[in-house]
Amino acid sequence: MFTLETNTGFWNPIIWIIAFLVLCIVIYVLRSFGESSYKKGEQIKPFLSGNPEPEKGDVHIRAGNIYWGFTESLKEYYKTMTNIHTGDINDYVYWFIGILAIILVVVSVSGGGL
Image (tube, rainbow, N blue to C red; front, top):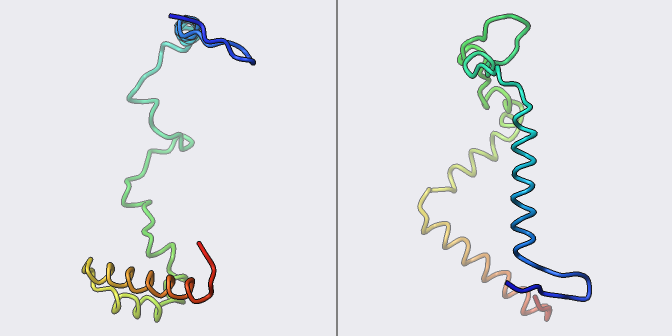
């Protein structure tokens, strides 16, 4: 291995590998000072002030309830959009090509470049 010297310092892969190994050893030593009495089953539960954790179905809020006002106010827009969108990928590609053609015509007529 060789040392690459530049105007601002040097690069030596061996030094970086040694520094990485020293850093890994320091991290391992610091981690070994951690708490060893961790109980995986009990300590992963959320703390709810001593109350038992409720079932997911009892506390799950569906997105329809959260966004009810938003979807209710835009009901006509959503109805129009669901009628337009067929789910066929060919229709989406045709729309993309058509709008891209319109944009290119507008850009070329206005004389502006991208």
